[in-house]
Length: 497
Image (cartoon, rainbow, N blue to C red; front, top):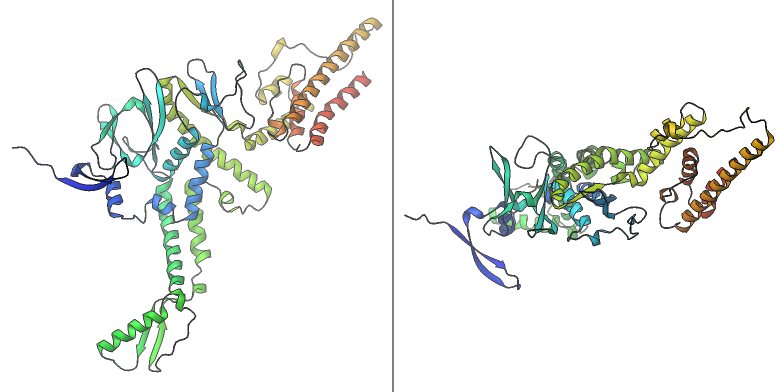
């Protein structure tokens, strides 16, 4: 005997915008379908609270836009050659062809800004995200985001995750091949789905914040009048009680009646059960702690949400903590999971947070300290180069004497040494001026200290010294002053020689 399946009939919109009667099996109905049909709101659902609690919305929005706005590169997985780049302070070009590196030139369709924004948003709200690769037999055609509420993993106790089923609008589930899906599950105890994330930690505080806002909203909607009892000296009959109640509800509720004047019988006494708003200490005792708890759950400093840093140093330190403690680990997590999918099609995603101003300032401060140690002969040049991220020269670097050697007593040899030094000085001077012209030409397009320049003649100490001066340069005159210092120093050394 064939078992009958229970069906549900719904009115759904077709591609042409018309309504059509559709039948779906009861087993394919999802929770999101029930919410969509019956309009049931979940008060403690993070997605619902995000639209009602400004602090929660700002934390999620800030993390999403930060991840989407990070400098990034798309690499050829086989050669490591950069094929696309985005969000760099200076537009990137191909080193071989000179063509601009943009994601529009990729051979498949993708909007990485939108994709990464949605990925981080769903990580903050549902603790899971999904990418899907549309392809033919030979190549990737399109990379797009999938709503995690429509995805259900297929799990095997022996092999782990073997695929996914996607259900949309109550239609029959559609299988998705495992190799075509990138799934971002926060690490935790669960093997086959999302684990605990920031949304779980912040939901209770966000719920308190939401209820507090609802209380204030209802309080003022009722004309700033709380729960009120009315006592009568006599016991009126039930019809009279109902009439008085309707009358008082009309008089004492609603913002429109808050400042009206009404006359009541002297035989009635009014008693409010809700204390005055000033006695509740809502902002200090309730709102501040829950806002702080939401920010802590999402790893966002309070100064980024409320702009209440006491000074610039605190603000800069909060920026560094936000990137190093929250964004960089999240960026590494997203890139690792994304590359499991992209590598199959010959590509890799690489973030470049080192190109951000906050990290360049931090690195410049570190290098400045190393240069001071080098000037005091605490560090060797190779140690300085290694600390600044360069390869050490080692024994291959010819020693450049800073003074004339004692062995040079012949006048012709002394003149030859001076001539060599002068030629080196002229070469360094020309290189510094070429660098200066390049920076002045790009002023307004990028920060002066971020403009790249490859040096052939300048020493590492000279390059770092110029870049340190460029950190605070904002005008053409300040840029010229940054390049003038090495000239003066070199001239004085030449004169002494």
